[in-house]
Amino acid sequence: MSDMVHQSVLIVDDSPDIHQLVGARLRSERVNLIHAHDAAEGFRLAASEKPDLILLDLDMPITDGMTLCRQLKAEQELSDIPVIFLTGTMDVQTKVQAFELGAVDYVTKPFDAVELKARVRAALRTKRYHDLLTTKAQIDALTGLWNRGYLNDRLAVEMSVLERKGLPVAVAMVDIDHFKPINDTYGHPFGDAVIQRIAEVLGNMSRDSDVVCRYGGEEFAIILRDTPSEGAMTVAERMRKAVETLQLTCGKTPVPVTVSIGVAGSDRVGNATDSGTHLLEAADRALYRVKEAGRNRVGGITP
Ligand code: GH3
Ligand code: MG
Image 1: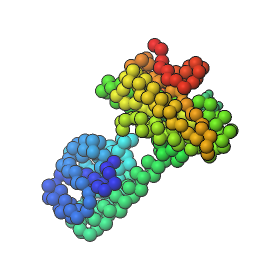
Image 2: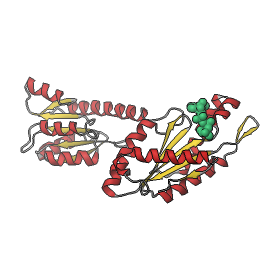
Image 3: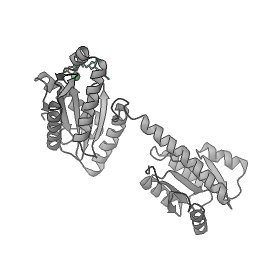
């Protein structure tokens, strides 16, 4: 997914002339063009660059556009990228087949400059809304952190990175201590504000590469990437301390708030590679133990 200013367009066509022509026609648009000259290169670049739109020649030697489109739509990570077919003349049956395969549009060669631009623009606009909605659905409204749905998806991705590259990953489960009495004493809106402040602290105390999520009501989960257990424990302790020193007040009344944190790292959890669930469960067990032990503390898992 590219940034908000420049979206990227991958063009897959075996004819150098078409690359040049499309390049010229889209020059005035704010898009990054990526060039592929056959289906194999197109697939590779789609996977590595995640373009916002693919302009795909229907008629290519070796592997044709329909086949490549089918391959793209079969990949979960690539299936949302809109495809516009570039074609010579196209009979009705082929058009129907293209749309059934998931193409959003087609442009017939030789293309009119204004028409090509208009169709590319429309497809990119829809893609932008799509990306926005997808992101919104994964964000918690109260805190602006990632939500539990995103956590689960992301954990699965991190587990596959762990498997491929051997990078350690850790999970920290954070739970606010005695939160129910805070709600009962100072009211639910104040409770919400406490959750927001703690979310802020967790965000500030973590690295950009960490994934901070609101797991449930007053519970948070943090994925610490490329982090062994020991490092994760250090980060968690820093977070615990930061919450303890917050000095929240309701009106003029000081309201001390603390959190308990359970940490589990892939280097200490056996079988962690089969799913992130193991890691989450282990962190949850560690959290349960520190709650039992008196709260406002950090605990790891004992091998
Ligand atoms: P412990 O130290 O054992 O974690 O005690 P606790 O009181 O924090 O734990 P418990 O799970 O019993 O209570 C959590 C409370 O959090 C219950 C619920 O009313 C409150 N809560 C859950 N979600 C929200 C929310 O979004 N806003 C507010 N204000 N309160 C919430
Ligand atoms: Mg709690």
